[in-house]
Amino acid sequence: MEDYPNKGKSLTGTVAEPLILELFDKQKAVPKKVIEEKVTELHLSQGGLPQTSETSYPVVAGLDRLKAKDQANNPKKGYWDINSAGIEEGIPDVPVAVEEKEDVLTVGEGASSVYLYYFPTYRSYAELQGDESYPCKIGRTDASDPSAYINNQTGTSLPEEPVIGLIILTDDPVGKEKRMHDILDTARLRKEDAPGSEWFDTNPEQVKNFYELLG
Image 1 (cartoon, rainbow, N blue to C red):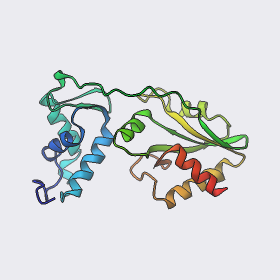
Image 2: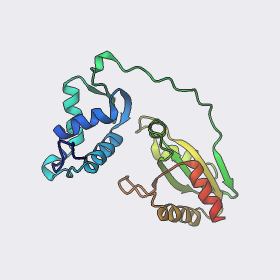
Image 3: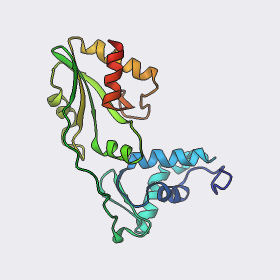
Image 4: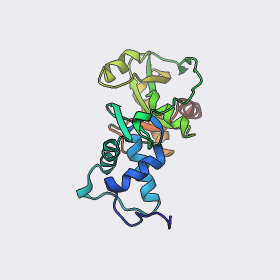
């Protein structure tokens, strides 16, 4: 921490630029939100100060600085490739084992459901970092199969399709959803910075275990 050159300084684009390289060099398709969270976290953990009102979106400014140097590129909205050697050099693909499609975890009984879904990019990035938790949305619907309801929610406005990781069948979706949210809140897993109030840092197996604890 003593060696951090920007200790005591506010987060700006200039400060964010080397942190982005330190955290994400030679990585592809990193979500912008992940870059913003991790860069801010690293800066503050080393004694840096938060951004000021005059330095709005400092991490985005840092990305733009790298892009101007051909060290970053955003091939699709909301995702960035980072390479200190230059984007034109290309980033080698990391071999990834082909994962067989898993059956959706399904527990409980009833005509309605509480569901959990996530986006593959966030899960893949968490796994690369050795994390077992990633952003998951936990909601409810009157249908026992939430697929159509979720598709209507997300539509075609997102760059990838959500994956349903868990379905809890129930005849009381309102009450069951509240109990699941309450236990996740007790575990301090709610994502306070997420849009909406149904996002948690967790995974399908963990939520399934919480459900079984509730009985």
